Length: 462
Image 1: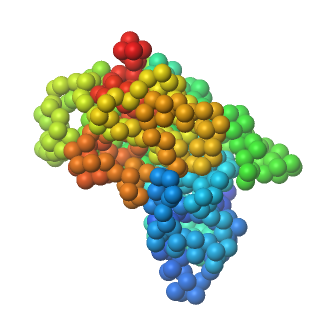
Image 2 (image 1 turned 180 degrees about the horizontal axis):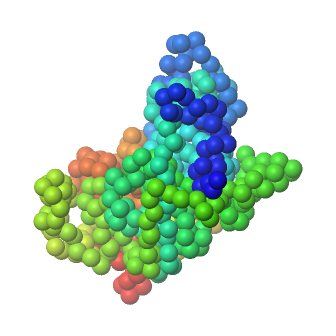
Image 3 (image 1 turned 30 degrees about the vertical axis):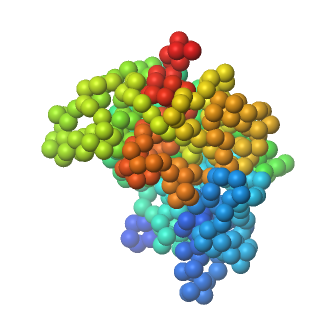
């Protein structure tokens, strides 16, 4: 019988099939952070249980970590330290040379690998689907269960395949592809589905771009996502600290090469996206589907049913934007480059290339936060930090920073922030802060011009 990529990984990890229709899925890697990990650990301790597989469990400090020099501790950070110490699992702590955002650290360290299952108490766990890792976000109750048993009870999702045809044009990145997809299918289209991304544009996309695309999968409701591992994936995983070596590596690669959807396999739904039609994208509203191409105008509240019209009207009011006008030229006061969506080396290299020889516009606060201490170190070795600081950007330590807003990195009420994060909800980056989601290239264009700008026009503007 023909199988999809999801079928192959799922079936290889079924421990038991329950009478209620759910399967017990073995979790190969359990990755937690300080915001939710300590709470679940407290629960299992109260019940007299231990972490079943500390060797398969890792923790990071990211959500509440300050990105400023002389990083301060917090109750969450101290609780995560205690939990790691008492239960014996690896902690990427503040000051660790490999500390960073969970969804950046797990792939770059080789914790996430093709064909593995991974659970994380964070909705953007699907990021590592880019490597062919079957990853699930989990709540505190599920987190507690995984700590104690190393399995997760789940119903198998329906399956959807998104096929990306064509090629990306100038100034267009994986972030633009993700935003275009969300605006096309809507924020609820993925509910109940596991998604496989495929097509010529995916084959051409580099691994860090795939990580960005997969990072935003939850923003249109999908449970998880996968991209079949290919030779790019294998080359990217080779030599990672937690990757296998020697004969174990050879055996792993041999299996990874079998992890592709069979030609005769079918999906519950298929969607095709023409990447030739995608220009740089930007959100205008307060959910990730409220997106326009940079050359388009802000939509009005006249389309859709009454609920949709009310939603549009509320978004326009919060964002203080007039319907029917272009976004190009709207002044900005803050720019943020970072988050688990866009804080890897390829993101920073592109941003630095555009920032070089330019200056952040007067009245704009621009911040660059690398996704991990490893990324920070590599960027500094290449001199990217100097390019940013000479241009007037702040160069920070690694962490979630302005994406989470749980660490002191927030904007000022009324500011308009152009951001490479993955969520633009009301008050997400600070009370009353108006967030526009963009690619790193579009973020730099806004920073140096002081207004929303088509990055493709940047050279013409000087």
